[in-house]
Length: 427
Ligand SMILES: [Zn+2]
Image (cartoon, rainbow, N blue to C red; front, side, top):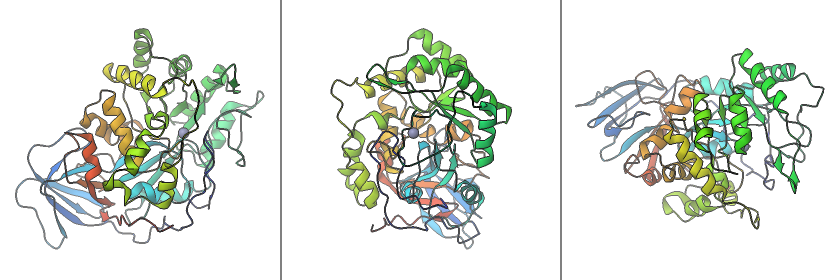
């Protein structure tokens, strides 16, 4: 981001202060990297290719894939035997702050989709994601400022942004967001938890107007919706996707059928309702802990606020994901980092583990973080290992399509064909 933001938006969590290092987002080297990785198995974003393959990268792009003797001619050779190549991961729900994109990249998340955030740095983000140079941060697409009402979610003390009042022309409001740099439009349809904790929210008519305004301009409209009833309303109104699973009730067969017919997708963000379960497993894992930055360690160590009598959000979300997936509703992986003991990068591993616990196969979970979001968010150059695609690549020691926990054996990352330095910052 072009702007130093030391305070993370308080999306329902305590505000946190990011680490003090800066300037990680420099595209210093204009040229893409070159390498050949040989004798690896390849998960191409949809499936495991038969046999062992070489993958040749030139100019930051995948230039060839084959079996047998790898072409070398001057390109550095990496031995991939015993390992698996996976496309760079896409996290379909984050909020960024200074240093978060570097934290993402050091865990193989090469693309982040922000679902509400400061628009000031989006011009730089757009230039960076077109570059094939050596970058120190994940590429970013963003909703920029979302569409919500005064006093509504997200409650973000100290951070001011435009909001929709009763008299606001929603179409003009959305046009302003796109002019500000929003790649897609995020709306908030969230009444809080009445009667104790109600929140003002957009009306149904305003949600419909927002979706129409986005579509009129060729942009996706995605929603923050956590309540099942409103979820169904939002997708029937034409939302392209909802960036949480419903946490309040398990969808009926009629709900699932109605949602499926809309062809919308879901980003369940189960890691944000697992109340620290995923965070603890990352902190305790020696394959992970040594690579965490101090900011990631700090965030993962947060105890989510205790809410006596709260519903089993994770159990309800998991039941919904199971039913949605079984019905063929596309599932995309997203963390909602840095909310509630979630971090850019590592927490996507636990989100994929949650998706498998909810019934996706490990390969389907990997697709949910690669080919599926690339297709749904129209990211034409990534999410696949195929000739012509951007060389955002991961190499793991063990096979994550057999056991999704094997993604934690990730040991080498290439962004734009350049190997990523995984050394965490000291502060
Ligand atoms: Zn969020």
